[in-house]
Length: 405
Image 1 (cartoon, rainbow, N blue to C red):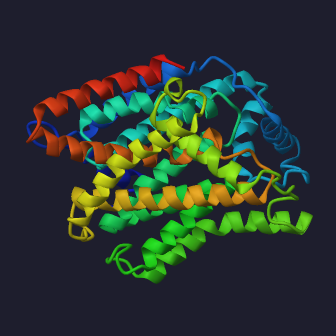
Image 2: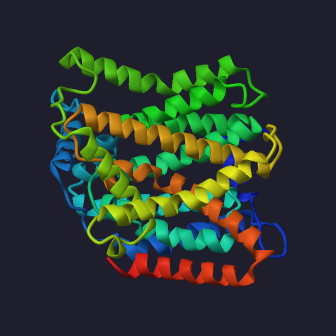
């Protein structure tokens, strides 16, 4: 019997296995709904749904475009710098004069982000306890605290990008039609939400073309055609903007900051993601360098571990999904960070910080968690005292990140 792609995807997600102390046990639909309830509770701890989000000049541009859309059915000739989806999402709230309810929208989007992050951590075999603990950290992470109390398109882009990450990785591992349909749908919506979705195009095309990438059960031309079809609405929007302004994203002012300042901001942001800001002494270069070195430890361990694994064959089960998810997360994180660095270097935008880099927080956290889980497994068999110390330090890190500024 034929089922919809979304139903196929949810059934597959519900069947993901979580490694535990007594072996892997299928979570099933009850586990799926349990994770969803947990995500709602965690989101409610850190973002009140009844508080209206704050606004910036970008926010006012989104709201003005939404108001124009409700009145005239278009976003207006002046809305050229951003893709059109987010103002359309805001339009019902503006039409009903219920902008205070935007807090509820942001709350639901944060809960969706935490839920998607938990599914990703499960698929990466980080362990259920570690994944649940990481869900709290994700909800209270600096980029989430910075983005979700605001009327910004990143609030919509983050959960959509995580959905794309999981669906595309499932397709790369198993080659199922429902996963490809959902991945392309999420990818198309991301392109209509932020121009920063363009790195997804590079990742999908590279994984489809390279000998070690993509699914062997699908012809590469068919996959590339599906990607192009998903990008078509965004291309039509870019053509509309070009017809009005002669540019693809409106007229932009050059960036006055030197490249060194952008790189410094990028390094400081990534270090703050790993260690609570109270330990960074106001961005001291030595503290930032130490944090980045600490971040490299689990990533290096993960890289050494993956080098010893054979390439996963499509349809090989959760192991294949894990490796494809790691590859997609690493590829997207690297290409996205380089894209943000290039965009901020070419255009007068803020220095790369929590807002622009927020979409790669969960992929980077997943990579770090995988490295930690692998080190934990190796140490558990050899040095129990080291495992106890690592668990204690991990608990202190989470407590400091949640309780301290």
